[in-house]
Image (cartoon, rainbow, N blue to C red; front, side, top):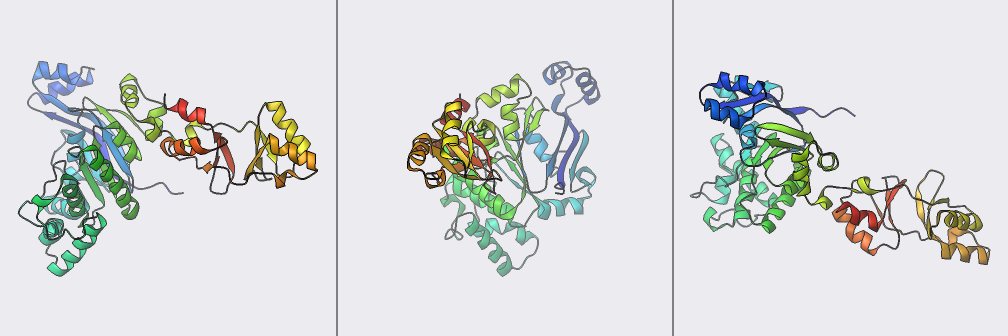
Length: 393
């Protein structure tokens, strides 16, 4: 399969505010931290040698505490901030080298931004806010309102299109902001802590809404947050920043299982692991496997040798056919019947990428460890209740 196109790239971006930039750079190169540099020079190192790539169609999340540089880096991609050195690149083009007409086109139709505090026009209706980008491009009113209405429906605000912004809740305002950002059909959404001002329940709803929109439209999203659970829930790839530098870039699963250092480990310890780890991380090889055409006596012997009260039954291609308990194997031998007549053919199954949070209710109800299978029904492993509980500790 072809590797996805890199749509955004931060290539060794450094941003230093104030005077004495050259001295500040030399000090950073020598290994001093940004706080010591500021004390000696008065210069503020907002970003230092930041590099990453965002593939087309992925949600790339940058997480960090206040002052880590995450909001500065996202603004480099619409040139609200110019790097001191390094390059912000969109679809192979250096944004810093764009002339004004090209930059205007980039902002109008290629890259849209969703802000934390909505950034809506309070004197305009929902419809007029969503259609604003189309209006300034000169799109006729009927056409832009048709497009805006489709997006208003998509974000769940049908019936509110003529309402004023002041009549909306915080979550509804952010839905308007997302719809407005999508109106020009941009390739990229820049989202700077868009849900941080919302209460937890509304925030969860908006996260679900964003994932739903992403599945439908396949937009490339660069998302900023300070919430590790939000980062892991939304991100295909997550970058952790500290003091203007990238500390680690990996999948949520990779960061959770292999934190780069103690700082990352502290972040991960605050995460809801049930939302990060998947069946793949906790499954084990089944201890007792038998073939569907096995004789009852052989099946009983296999279970007794391993000390198991049940066995997973597979065919010649390792496809799961069900579960056979020791009691049913004994009945089959007593009655002189094949084990196929006694197999439980509806065991609970799941996929390797299923989150632990989704496995927990299944594990509570299942009589056996949950079977992990692929799209062809091939048995890949099993997940026990004990493994689920242990993964959360």
